[in-house]
Image (cartoon, rainbow, N blue to C red; front, side, top):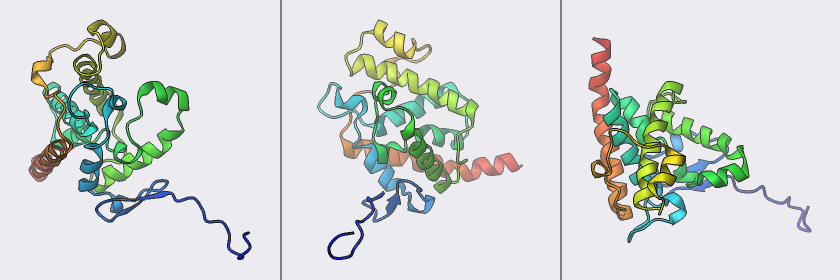
Length: 211
C-alpha cells in the first residue's frame, strides 16, 4: 500500500475504441464489438510488419478482402461462410498482425486472447462462436494463396521461396487479385462495403434454407 493508504491500481486490460466502446481484452463482450472499429483498425494494421513495397502499407483489411475473394472463387459458399472468411483476421484489430516467425518465438499464449476475440466478433454478427474445422481449413487455403501473392508481389520473396512456405497456387493468378496497396481509408471503406453486401444476402439465404 502507498502512503496514502490506496492500493496500487490493477493493470488496464481494456481498450477504448473510436466508436466509444470499451473492449475488455481478457473477456471481450460481443456487445462491445462494432464493425466500424474492426474496419478502422484492420485498415491501419500492416501485413508483413510493414515490409512491403508501395506508397501505402498493405493492410489486414485489404488482405481480408483478397482472402474472401479467393475463398468465394474456390467454394460454393453462402454469405455466412464468406463473412467468416472476411472476418478471419478480425481479432487483429485489437492484437495487431503478428508474423509467423514471431508467433513461433513467443509461443501460443496469445492464442487464448485471439480465440476469445474471434468468438466475440462472430457472436456479435450472429455467426458460430468458433469456425467449423472444415471451413477453417478452406479459409486457410485461401489465406495461403493470398500470402503467396503478397510475398512475391510486395514482400520481396522469389516464387520458389514463397512456394516453399505457402505452396504454389493453382487456378488463381495475381491478375485476379487487387494486391496493389490501398490507402487506409479506401481499404476501410471497401471492407465495410463487402461486409454489408454479405449481410444483405443473409436473410434471403436463411429463407432458402428453411424452404
